[in-house]
Image (tube, rainbow, N blue to C red; front, side):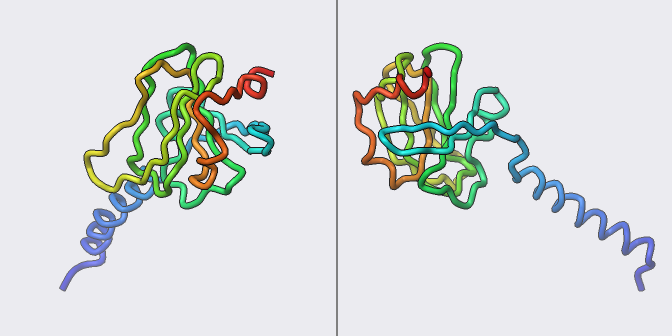
Length: 151
């Protein structure tokens, strides 16, 4: 027969790792939200402007409305890449140069494996926009979003 003390200790070894796993996999960063009109449609964009916010991105989100998304802002042009690890939903991903002109776009699928690929473009980017996959056709390579982003 197991004592109450031993039972409590066993329970702790089960509960603490599970609780740690749950909190480790829950979004914790709060993002500022900016309303932006892009291609004649209003979007509520969460702004990823810090290292911590960029690392978290849209991980663990179970859904994303068609008028919502995330805008990653970098301090200068570079080879910025993203991955879909722990991202539960497909996304339209749009890379913009320093003038906020679209240089590439892709629909990316969630990655459920241990080794997820990362995605980037061959031209330096300064912004990455993530939207609902249904928004892919609203945007074209060469479109300028500069008037909107630099108000």
